[in-house]
Amino acid sequence: MNIIDYLEKNSKEFPEKNAIIFEDDKISYNELYHRVQNFSLPVIKKQEVISLIAENSISFITTYLGIIRIGKIVHVAAPNILENDLLNQLKSANSSLIICSEKVFNNISKYSKIKTPILKFSELKTVANIEKGTRKENKISHLIYTSGTTAEPKGVGITHQMIEFTTKNIIDVLKYSSSDVNILPLPLNHSFGLGCFHVSITVGSTVILHKDASNLQNLLKSIINNNATTIAAIPATLTKFLKLEGVNLDSYFLNIRLVITNSTAIPKNTIQSFREILKKGNLATYYGLTEASRSTFMIFQEDLSRDNSVGKSAPEVNIKIENNHNSIGEILVKGKNVISSYWNNEMLDVNFIDGWLRTGDLGYLDKNGFLFLKGRKDDMINVGGEKIIPFEIEVIVKQLSGIEDVAAFGIENEIFGQVIKLHVVKSIESDIDKSKILIHCMKNLEKFKIPSKIDFVESIPKTSYGKVKRFMLK
Amino acid sequence: MYSDKDLKDEIIKIFFEVFQNMNEVDFSWEKEQKEYENWDSFSQLNLITLTEAKFNITLSLDESIEIKSANELCECVKIHLT
Image 1: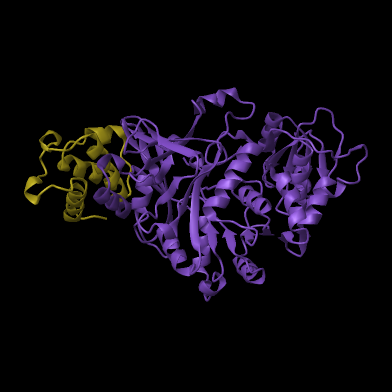
Image 2: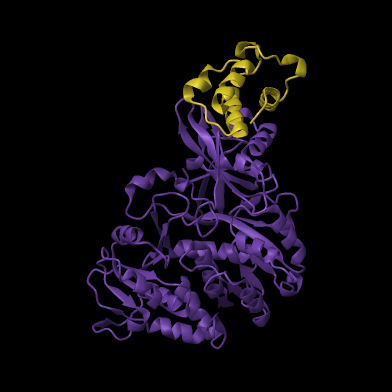
């Protein structure tokens, strides 16, 4: 069954139940199914891929499902995408049409290099020569370009089979059911947000969709007003919740049974605090890439001694560490959640070996099969032949008070090939200086791991999911 | 500005930070790199890095390579501070 089958099933089982609530708007399962059924597109020759670029909204969802229902592939892109990135993605995807929100239209219509036709949501029903949306099946459901932490975006075509497999794992491990009410402030153009949405449609629960997670008070009100049972948020949002002054989080999270976050490093204090806040619930995380969604799961209440772990392999997913036993190496993943090739890019086939995807992530498995992440292979620093993972240095520097954030990376050096440079963000009141940081490193790190350059900076460039964009550091 | 004594005290501190297991009796101003048990290229790099950070100076590549004793490091720093 694909996502449209589940929508149809739940439109019969829960016709009047709210499928989505978004700001002052809401839509029942029955109405959502009928809007998706009636979704139509202008006829464009050879159309296979349609680009959808919009902020979270009910229109995003009906368009996303509508395109899938008529057998086209949805290419989803971030609403703030820059002109060259969009141009590259449209070219690679061979997209024949862009459907977007009013706000996105105001931006991308100024992009002079974009020649692909653009339609606003409001124009969908008014264009001439409309193709009536008969149901068709395409092997691939949607296409996402990973922007993540590397410079070159890669097209990832997600099949219906991958969605069904991954969604079933999420439901089984995290025990989603039709009685859930899910707060979703994550962008739907990303694998994390889209995965949560698929789960809700599959089980027949309700999504309380938010534009984003910037208004924390609004999210807290939303939990209470909607009797929410789950919330999905990135670790930074959870940490910001803890910093809200004069707010008793216990009362807001009293009926929350699940807080799901993703695998960006979660501060230990955030994990411990949420363990205490969630009286009846669990804090969980997962490890995955767009290419291999939800490969592990970790429920922190079930294991009090592995707060740094991203958990064990998901059901029927295999994980191994390449060429390394009991030590750090590249993480390889195999399973029905893993793509078999990248979109229109044979050069990237080197990332697959006998069905195993080389993730480019570094980590290790403990003797009980728990996975621990240690950074990106591309980020490894080579100082005179000694290999160093930036995380090892960052975690030591963060022990110092007065350090808000830090990123370690390699810079060219005439003698050693590379040496380590740090970008450090000091907290406002901090008077910490470079020598204090160096001395702390010398006390706690091997001598080849000591930074050679330190710059104090205003901020560290990061993705919207909190991962350091190391390729931007110099 | 550093007095001669303050400067020397800072250099000694740098040596003890870089060579964490060194005893006080093992330090001397004239003792050369080859006489140290673990003064390798990484220690050299760390000596230079910490010196640059403490005195807010930048040593050239040639200066960095040529320093072979605490005395030579001290003299090099003096030149940069004057």
